[in-house]
Image (cartoon, rainbow, N blue to C red; front, top):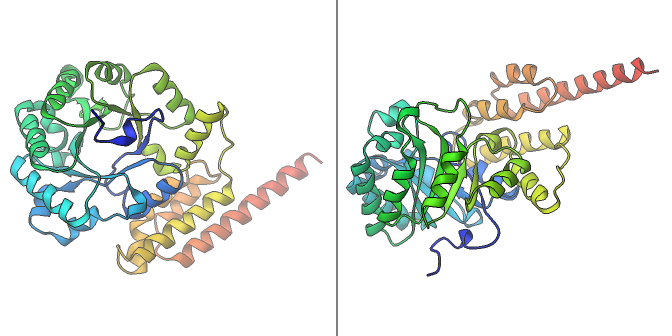
Length: 339
């Protein structure tokens, strides 16, 4: 039987861009796609917000054909509302799949019995998954964590439930809800789950480099890998991973000039998209994204201090010029020291 997700039925394991609220918006997905990400998933979207025809919520579902294959991720605990929201999204945009969020650890989501809270309520989790699979004309996937806490790691049980409900693939973040984003991802549990079910499992957690990608593909039976926070700091990680898989050689770090070129482009794309309002609001929205880009840049602490107050493209150019001058001065001083 052919896979409903053809990108998971080839000899080339796909690299997913993980859905991250406030990060994987329309613009950033486009950037990562250009840099080699194979599959996109939107920021999570409230099913209730979609049902209420909230225009602010609906904008999170927007994408272009260039970003395919792409799934829209929904969260909620009401099977009927989730199905209704998914049908509206399919009518609007025809995504390649609908993804259910069973992994978000944020309290405002968990307190409404959404995200990872459903890992403690397997009957509701099953009702959500089964209802969407039966109601929708496109594949349904799920993203989950390995459990609520260290004492209740139940991912092996949950993947069986999701497979039985007809879910087409499962992405597993190797942390518990209690861990949040701290500690190490438990890849032993991910590997166990990948052996337990016939549907594809996508591994997520602590994937930053091509070496990480190669190791997890070599040591587990996952069919794909999902990269999250590493892409925030280094969207080139997809390109670097592909190069490493092809050659076995770690690529050189991205030059400072290329990083600045991307920083400028990302800001301009965000402004041109018109999604965040006027320039001041757009640049305020970009502050955390700009601070993420400083990882790997010399003088990163100083740049973060500047970026946390930025409100215009002109300020960005001033900061870039100052940084360039600082690097030139440092290079000159270093050269003189060896004369």
